[in-house]
Image (cartoon, rainbow, N blue to C red; front, side, top):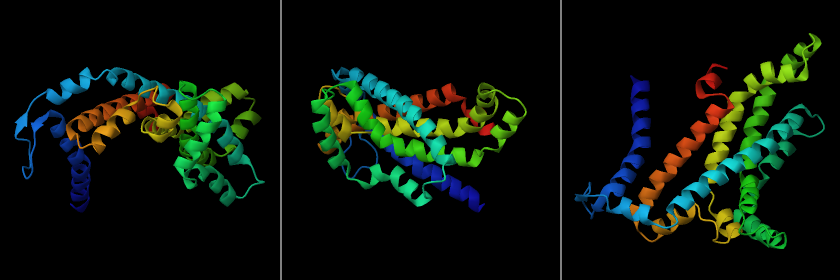
Length: 259
């Protein structure tokens, strides 16, 4: 009974903000102290869809987050494998290095990076934004994949190698099935973090490349909650599509759970 109550409470706490977002999206009049909108309509959705930067922002956000995820995994997977098997570096120092991007102020990193990217002609480009996003997403992927490598260990691969298995056979039949759940989780989290980045996109993009956070936050700060909520719903939909796509590409949600 206690577990059921806890589950219902958790579902309520998760669903309540989503319900409020949906109500703001379809509300044309919602004045204090009313608990629900006084009038409903599609005015807010129409304004959002008529925004010239709406579809470019959706496409840019998805492409940048997906590209950042690929680049992050290409760096994190081999790096995590080396770090998981090394013995020359203490675990505390290793943890400090992984979490260093979280310790340093984001605004300081972004502004200094912007000056460097200006010299390299990377400001206002997708490449510059993807590289800046990778800096902030890499710690998430590294930590998850590193723990996956540690839990898997080297025993399975060494046993298969002693029995005559080729490296590609070990990768296909042992390493990938065991690592797929961790890699899928790292990919999904990387996609979410990249999609929500505002400062790197704003400074490195120079206002030339629009994404959903760049459009959403000004509406929220100016009190235009209807449009902010509508963009938030779109943001959630893009996030869900991206995460589900990555899970299917890497091995499938159910496949990962079984392993």
